[in-house]
Length: 449
Ligand code: GLC
Image (cartoon, rainbow, N blue to C red; front, side, top):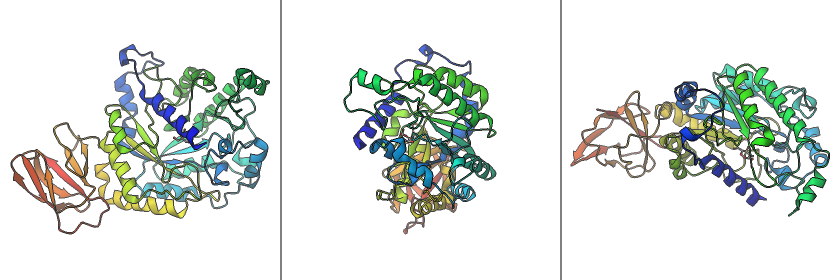
């Protein structure tokens, strides 16, 4: 099962990177100019750091948000999670405060994941939070709480739906047959009508985009075109996107609608759970890498592969140093809280961001003529002309190759304390404090000439 998920993740990655047509050859859906697009996305490219929240019925089994697929559960078997869902500690204000304290500027919540359960009060289904013991529209409360903290609001909506009766059984569906012929699929799908599902999709996205005020981001997930898969035609993606743009002209939409052949079929690429080194290939493009604390997206009780604070900061700094955004995921428990491991990770990120966020917001990769010193990551703010050297491994002496003559002043970012430097040929030598400052990854701010 894990292998299958990995295969689909690979497909996703390929889908987002195989841009073979040149920009001028690509088709267009709207008439927006590149300058208009840049303006529309300016806040997002500036803010760099967001929170993903995967929450749904899968928090109860607590063993992967794909549990229905992995264990081939039927709607009947899955029903117990709906019946027992009772998030009586749900406190979106505390979620929002934690996101804000961590330095996250936007948040994207799963309004519906592949399991089909809706956290919002949709009039097109009974399979929703208002009909559980939660008895309320959890999306509305999320929106209100995050907006109140000044955090931009985004909706994740799964194109896939393993509960809807008209969503045809395909190769990823929990009820998929093993190595089956077309006729087996046809028999299984007798009576299912994707036209009705397409309409459901449109109706629900319309609800989300017209009844909750201004929505900043829409994160649709995902397409897997080809045999026994689903893609743009299954979603009527072109018309769907036109509708989305009309309902929310400022909205920022991800790239998982399978519209790669269109210049404006997506606003950003979504490399999922990739290593920092792999992000180099996206230079010059607009992208956001989505990452987890421990591997899965939904709350997974027994997963013990949690990243360290150092690793999480490397992901954040590394994303910006390659010119993109990071959206870091939290999977709240079925009670409705961030578990202790997530809370402590967010707190640690917040401590670092408090002292160093200037090297994240508004930053991107360093200009070509600045080499990356050993064991560091560079980010750069073109407006203030400051270069940020992130010290991944600490040494009192740091050689900056070829930097001599390019720097006016150097200081530690978190306390603005001066760092002296000398020259050795073309190189600049930084003389840092003997003892590492109390920062997981100290940052040196260089004021450029
Ligand atoms: C994948 C997975 C999913 C997760 C998402 C986040 O497509 O299906 O569980 O929501 O990526 O990027």
